[in-house]
Amino acid sequence: MAKAKGLSYPTLGRESMLLALTLAAGSIDAISYLGLGYVFTAMMTGNTVLLGLALAQGEVRAALRNILALLGFSAGVFVGAIIVERDSKPTEWPVAVTAALALEAFVLAIFSAAYSLGASERAGGAILLLIALSSLAMGIQSAAVRRLGVPGIATTYITGTITSLMVDLLGWLRSRAAPLPVPRTAGDGSVEKSPSMPWEQRVGVLAGVVVLYCVGALVGGVLLARSSPLATLLPLAALLVVVGNAFIRQRHDH
Image (tube, rainbow, N blue to C red; front, side):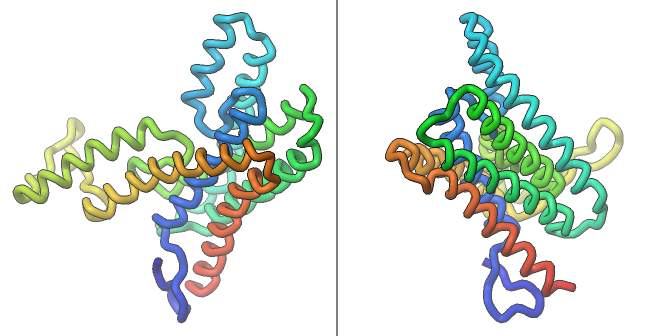
């Protein structure tokens, strides 16, 4: 928790908001994989593998779903980048990022409504629409999180996050054992950047991203298995919390 300027009550800090976005992404992947025909709409690494397997097995419909998810995600990143890259101010959480996440929330609201209304009879066309909406939303989120520029932190894929976690865990253990060495000089003559936050905090956030992604998938999967209408509301609620929190902080910071 953190206190925004002028606020007498605590609000979520940047790291907590990133964890909430991770929870949303994990639950979306569970919903899309279990409810939309075994396709990931947030984690494109896994989706690319599924596409290759579908093509190898001659599963044309499955391949179409994977391709649509890739296209939707790419379009989302493109749209999100248009929004966030207009704001070049070096702030912790730019207003443009909040705007992009608000658009993502709007798309997820449409996704949630469409999923709930057609929960009992999702035909091929309806599933494709749902895949397109959820992957578009996750692409927007990826562009927004990238704009924050927190090294090693991503909310829609985990492989790179685990890699950063292990490397930074090693760095933290070394810093506990002995003073940090002088930064090495990179090949272009510049000095390598040190972590943007203390080792302990950085390792904690990276570990939290991995855990929350799994928790999001777990909760989303359980809700979906029980045919609960809350399944699609979980990621939407997490996103609305982030957008509302960011709006409050920015309103009182200016």
